[in-house]
Image (cartoon, rainbow, N blue to C red):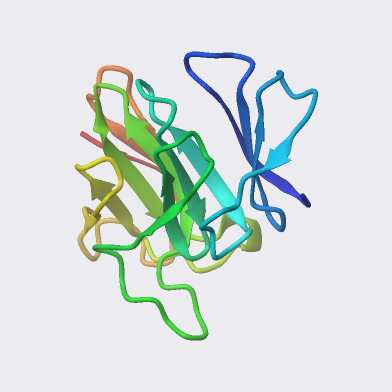
Length: 177
């Protein structure tokens, strides 16, 4: 699988684990990590930078990839590319590499995605996108100048009460209320 970039646990079943790798894609374990299987059907990229599991419906999983966001609604068996609202794909560059993903715990249909390629320390654009429909479509929520233009977003967290969003980046930590 290569370099393990991300890991998550099913919020309802601690024996179910998810791993994202840089060359192997998405792996699933149903026996607390004793064995793993590759679940890449529908992925057009094998570099998983980050992943997020819906806090109430663990069949819904989002992957942050160099090519954007992929969504599964069947526990990771199959994946669909979700690009609506992101910049158009480019032929020789990544237009929306996802460096961080997070569900809002107070409204799990709300998801945040930060742009950047943390492992490569590049492609920071100072952009965070928000989805109000569980990752189906996205809208930019950081207007130009809100964050440094070269900030590489590497993690996003929403406060447990939903009162603020935190973004960790190559240029520091940013908070929005």
